[in-house]
Image 1: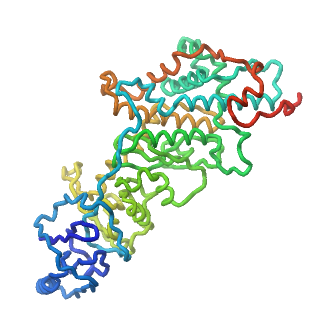
Image 2: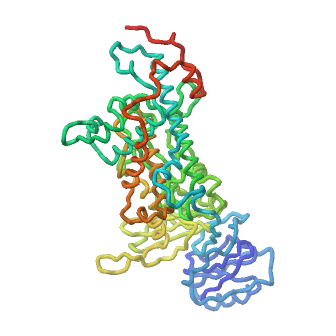
Length: 562
């Protein structure tokens, strides 16, 4: 029989399923109830039944342990006790509308409680006007829109103009006939770039090869190889001359693209209740000050990105590029979630790189609940570390600090878990061992394995059709990866909201989505690099007026002939 007691502070009903290992509870987080603990019993009781419960425990307990009763400042005679004969009943979610954080410090105990889970209040779903029969290209334009393409066009032309003003060209240089790029050409260029992720070939020249084994007329019909190489050479995303002298932003050259996509990712769609945070890698083996090495990733060398994804679909809601400057993990997680996800009752799943007791307590105050793996040096009690040494396979031990649960379960090795969502209950999983017996594990592990797949799912999809190629400019590698993220998010929303029967089929894949978008990106463009104006027909004032930025360098800065 389990005694339950409603708390006036938080409104929750608490029970203790297993006897605590401690002989007393000295820290009380509720003003009118306390835990009577001995080696054989653990209860929450109201103060008006204090004397009767003490007598009952003393009569039944022959262990000789001292029973310690805390002093209570206030006594409420209206407290009522609810008797429940089924300690396995766990249907106690959503019992309060706000999370309670006691004023007095809470210490670690061995008693278990049912956590208080506030209702999920965020209005998840798409936040822009759509028609359910839109073409796939209309979906990708939510992120890769005309404004972004115009910005890339402007900065590419600006960089080419700066290059010609500071470099003396050889008499027979191909760049003498260079024509400034147009927005239509950038659309075609990006379409070809996406196509190279599906049609993989060893060298970029092979796409325009006339050899029968490689020959594909489509590429030459859309753009010539020389024009593609010219745009690739001058492709740029920010004005170098406008960079302040004291600017310490290592991502300055790609900052406009990052800010544009992050804003659109966050404002277009709000994720459902379960979200996950993990790292993604953009492969890069060149020289770069913020290149990292992660041995557990498929791409071990590269640029690291922190991703916030919806667990069910893999939609990338937010991301941040690591640029070599570390900052506190708690600050990073709070910034990644932002005011749009905090205080809404989200369930956050993350691995031991992020989790700590301090972070769980911080997010608990913002009505955000955490579940994941854990490192014992991130705030676990010393007593729990000692108890872990004596565990056998299949056994678990836990300790709780208020709503923060730290649990260690021994499987083939110790699995360390932390959660503000779960109890320490051991449940049967769907898996069996070699003997055909059901595997029993903490309920934390089941939810963690189920909802931590969001980032892995997104990372898997991004690696199917990588459009980035070997280059000496890390900026192009990073931007092409970001454009892939935009395409993936478009595909996820498209599959979720489209009602066209053709696209609702199960066999309509990410590859088909990209192919449909590429056809639209390249079908109404000009042929083979026919720009509107040549380089010699455009003066400095027109370039400055198009970009509305710093005037290009004067002609006196030309490099003298060698």
